Length: 212
Image (cartoon, rainbow, N blue to C red):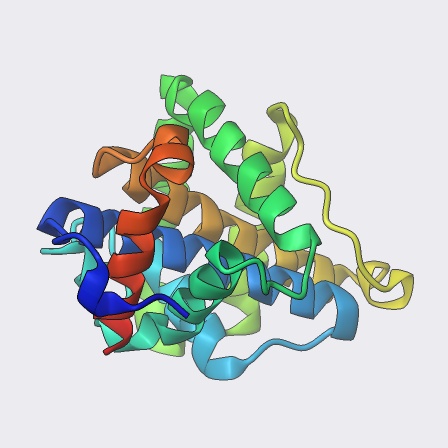
């Protein structure tokens, strides 16, 4: 546990980047849960998939419907930096998504195709909800047709019984799209891998501030 009274002041930009990182981990934790059990946490799944459609949100917190919705992801961040994270696959997945995001934003044609695909699902998501099976299937198909062709591929391990079911695979891909959305936001806010190496204490302080 970090003693927040001894933590350095946390600037707003780092707090915002921490929210995006929490969104990334939170989405990937759901990817892992779906791959292992075939089921997601409904509220957390909604937070992740809603973020895909909030392309022009007023603030990083608004992307996720408020910072309170990121409490699970913030808790995962605290566990990671405290070397208490139970799922060893989660940091590897996060690194793969961060690397994938760099290739994605460098491909203008693919970025436009993904944005157009998301916009096409905006009305159904508003009408039926972002977690409706048809919406998730469309988002999963969009990921499969675009981001899945980039390298490095994000390899999700789990229970073969569930990963052999098309609806589960579609859900995993849809949430991976949400994870990439958080990675894009993180970069847009100035995030880089150097943050994770050189600003760990400040990120932990931001996490504690947000969890309070």
